[in-house]
Amino acid sequence: MTDVLVAALRAIVGDDHCLTDPPLRASYETDWTRRFHGNALAVVRPGSASEVARVLVACADAGVGVVSQGGNTGLVGGSVPRGGEVVLSLLRMNVIGDLDRTAGEVTVGAGATLAAVQAAAQAAGWEVGVDLGARDSATIGGMMATNAGGVNVVRHGPMRARLLGFEAVRVDGAIIRRLPGMPKDNTGYDLGGLLAGSEGTLAVITKVRLRLVPRLRYRTVCVIGFADAASAVAAASELRRGLASVLALELFTDAGLDLIMRHASVAAPFTARTPVYLLVEVAAGEADPTDGLLEALEALAVDDSSVAVAADAAGRHRLWQLRERHTEVMNAEGVPHKLDVSVPAARYAELVERAHAAVTAADSTARTIVYGHVGDGNLHINVLGPAPEDEATDDAVLELVLELGGSVSAEHGIGVAKVGWLVRDRGAETVAAMRAIKAAWDPAGILNPGVLFED
Ligand code: FAD
Ligand code: MLT
Ligand code: ZN
Image (cartoon, rainbow, N blue to C red; front, top):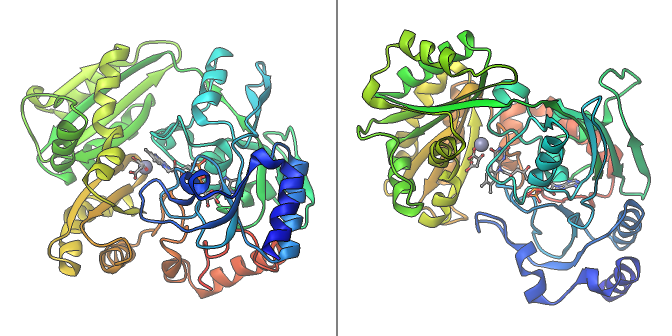
């Protein structure tokens, strides 16, 4: 039966785009953290929505699961097979077309990388409004499927906020689209909004129409040191309230800075070392926002020896490395358990302070490194030490997050990593409503089995 399916897939996408040899499949079968992996029956790389439709119909007829995959930078195990599925890679469908300079809108293939779309938008005098460290590999389809957040959510919102229109393929091969899509469009259910964050469980996204944001020519970045998380969170909230130019508010700690200096060879922002750091980016289209930032820092009475400010591109890049390269250095230290969570602003500092104790209560030898998007109440708690399949520290952290009134997934999604926690977080009735949608769109459970819902 599987031989028949593979032959059918070869006929649809061509031999060169149906990979069955283990070495060719390998990079599609393990996730970015190396915590999640599984064998694929085949990796198929369609070149059009109609090929996607034929692949889905063939797999559904054979009763074989399909795992959609973009850049494979997802951090919750949802982009790699669990065992025996077909991986559907969207990377060939990467055309950036129909950029409307006047309206500030662009339609892109699901496989286009964020960096490529950012370059196209900037060339036309606009910006995507979403940015994250995986920009060179993460695809617009994968980002929409996870409703990715990133470092500019505090100003522009997550991917769903940028979505104007879409094209997607349902498991029965039906191609649904709303293109170009309009900023105001109240014609029934918002299916694009539903697909945002659906993690490949409802349909395969093949095109996305994005609403761009005006280009912000003037940018300044600063890093400020604080004695504790509470002071950093208070400063972040003061800056968000007082400065309309805030584009990013990011937090990291001295333990993370140590690893960045060791593995990424980036220098500390200033001589003094402090327990917690806040990175602030301000940006504006018409006038340099630096003076406003400096005035705000003065009002906060931050110590001059614990501030670094950069308005030039090289200086800004250097300061951003201190925050952005945390993901990479976690991997250099081991196979991290990545707990991406959010809590109400008033509980954020408490989460930062209590995370390590929660982890060590479950595993006394585990290490905890935290960083995150403080402007959105989003903390990334990385646990190093426990074996990939040992979930004791994951459970301890997520238990604490629920106690603090938070969400077990802020921006990375549920994937397979947190399926056991969806009902705890959202409640049985809400998850039953989600399952009803899943049953209507994918009754046989072909699309990303094992993701989002427990079997
Ligand atoms: P993949 O990893 O390939 O897939 C992710 C999920 O989407 C899977 O469930 C997959 O099945 C599904 N999917 C993929 N493509 C499609 C499609 N076309 N149709 C339907 N389903 C699909 N995330 C953030 O939110 N904020 C960050 O700041 C951030 N920073 C990161 C930094 C680094 C260095 C890394 C490695 C990751 C980071 N991530 C971040 C996580 C990741 O980049 C995002 O989740 C991103 O959206 C994944 O895009 P992708 O193309 O790699 O998707
Ligand atoms: C980040 O903000 O750096 C990303 O979400 C990735 C991570 O959690 O490491
Ligand atoms: Zn993040």
